[in-house]
Image 1: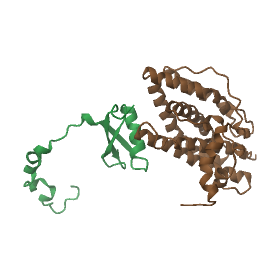
Image 2 (image 1 turned 90 degrees about the vertical axis):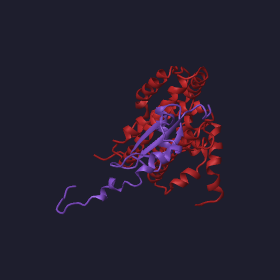
Image 3 (image 1 turned 180 degrees about the vertical axis):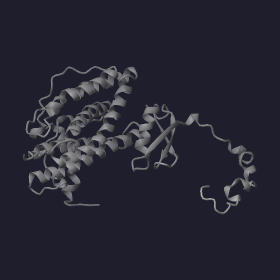
Length: 244
Length: 95
């Protein structure tokens, strides 16, 4: 029996989710409500960046075009990125950051746990390491969701607003990909079950909203991704091959 | 929310199995559960430890610097309290 080849596009999608999310997390550095939270969000972003590096390198190998992690991170335009819309929009509200992290990290946690026993040994290795990292991200998001949701009247309102704002972008995480080693569609019940438990325990409500059109996996993005990439890629594009 | 609203916690890190927890510093956190996680993020991000304690700073009872002489000086001339004061008899292996 031959092992099915993992599609490069699937790995690139996971890599771009992690990379773009890491860049958004980095926005909080020097801006978080507390020094301790500043470090926590930066640590989470760095974990995601580490996952992105390993996944981008592997995606480059699967493509067979010789592109490195830096080529893929810094020299692609927004239409070539494969991340979901959930991670690319600005998150300048702390509640939004927490709501998004709760959904995204829980999804990553289920996906990486499944991939850790995949027949693709490279992917299994990356996922096996990432499982422990995202477990902490889920925990961080869970604790803040509980405290903000079941906190003051204002924190409850703002946490519910944040969930309402993020929820249209949740469904895109579960778009079917039958060629992938783990079809994200199969994760839906487990992810939404875990998130739903936290939301209920925080005295909040799972929003009932229509999903956004999405399209990140096909290279269709919101206007926000281009701005994010401009900031992220500027140095490398202005000084090709720069190191320090 | 300002840090004036968050109590101070003292952080103790155990660097390796077999060693004891050592005071590493302090941080602000709204409650014990978050204090432990903040301690993880602030004090163990470079693999400094395998175990953490956090203690509310207000719960620590400290000796008074003004009483230092009365507390500590009387031990100064009691060298016989050190185990090196005694001769170990020859042939004793498990002491």
